Image (cartoon, rainbow, N blue to C red):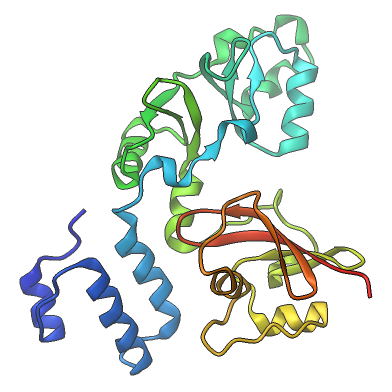
Length: 271
């Protein structure tokens, strides 16, 4: 995805810009110099990196996808909707490699009082299947054209690798989006104590806020967020499900992609 032509960039910055990384570095220096608000820098960097990402980089893996079985009853579907808070589900015939359609939660309402008339197959929407190597800018365009909020991602052998939603694509640019089903009291600040010594932390949570809540001393002059601190400590961006020890804490990554840590669990060792 070509965001700017080189002539425009040369006029803006007074020098030749050869690649995206050089442009990111120029923007970073410009932010430090006060040419524009530093808070805008992560958004600009995300937009520049957007075109390099593919569906496989951001998908929710198949083993984490909540699905509805084609044989499910009204009661079973209602319980799944309540427990997950999702508005859309892949519907499968026996296993996840056999996706037969997409079910919208709102379609269950008319059948709550008349479950005997419920016919799941008649309520299914056509699924959108995309290859895992599809660039996410092209995927976003296709989802908009198809009016689809959920895409089924398949690998080179046509096995289902996972799903991508519109929300997941948007989060690559503006950061994680929380809705009423995600929220936990206090988590709007980025960190919440789930039980004594156990914290759920957002990657964007500032180190100062984290230290205040957890009585810790995670300090680094080069980074400002917990996600940045963890990545610098490890020397890499960890994967979802990975766990390790940092100082006096056991850390488990709940959600991460190729660019950032979105959320993690931090457990303090007993004294």
